[in-house]
Image 1 (cartoon, rainbow, N blue to C red):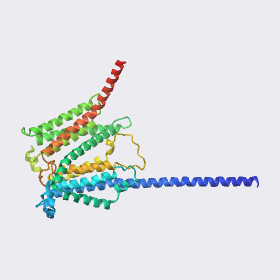
Image 2: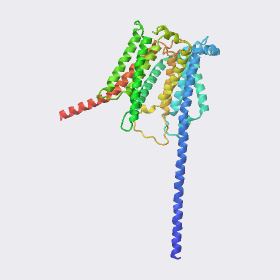
Image 3: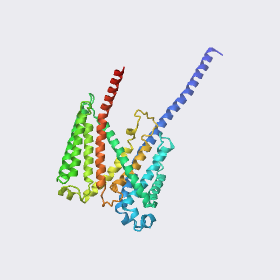
Image 4: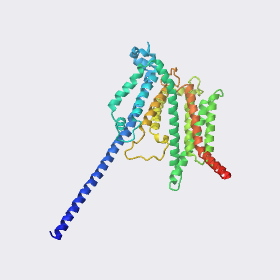
Length: 420
């Protein structure tokens, strides 16, 4: 065999081997591209599932309202169920709300138990969370029907537990709100590259504080216009004091957090104070006569509908904000990781079911609320006032805690140096 023939054979072998090596590389590249497409499809399904569950939660709110206000009129045949009593009172009004709430709680608790360990998009639990809606519809119907066969004593016990669950929901919502305020403050923090953002941040902080002050003035003129309204005067005055304290602490040289975050928090606690005085019983509320005339008819209905949507939005926004409850902030997410924590999402909605029950019955298990009313009564008023004070306390502590920890570290260093 000549040298040229040997060289040709060797060249053919190298070409053949290089072709065989390039084929797997191309296959791997194509496989990775397909996986990316699959990940995006599964991620999109997961994100869409949030809105489906939010819609279910909204429907449950409306069903609870229907059983409270119109159930006895339009579903009279429920009195044939033994636990509902002779006239069906055990399945309507406040007990009807609690039964619907319990059904909603059971549904989202089952979803929590079946998805809590989900971490990747191609796990079986992810398919269950994002799909199988026909089977989940059956689960929802069974969950909603089951409480209507429980004795009223069991529903009363659930109502007592629901108070704790609703309080937990408010706490989670508060943490989520504070986290949101912190993110906003970081986003609008001025630096050399974001001069325009600095101007907008200053404008927004001024706007929030002006709105807060106007809110306080409005509450004084509307709900504390008479000296006999001493409790409202106390609520509003204490809110104004909290605004001043948050402003002073935020601008302190050792804290120096700026006005934006405190301005947003000021607006939030003014809103909570307004909701609290609005929740006072109508016969005892210290409103001006003109305001009392306007608070009827379609305004009441509109306020009721806005309150329901606010409940749904509170549950939805808190449920998808699981990152602010993580102890480890440097957790790395892979390409095939789920976009949000399914277990946390469903547990928030299950607690939200307890929360909307408390709003519909005004935190009173023996309450018989008026039609189209929501969260009205002294219990509701004090829950909101305590929530306001707690929110302000947490925020102020968030501002001063770094300074306190720094002082403790400095004191400990000085003590160690003295001992040495």
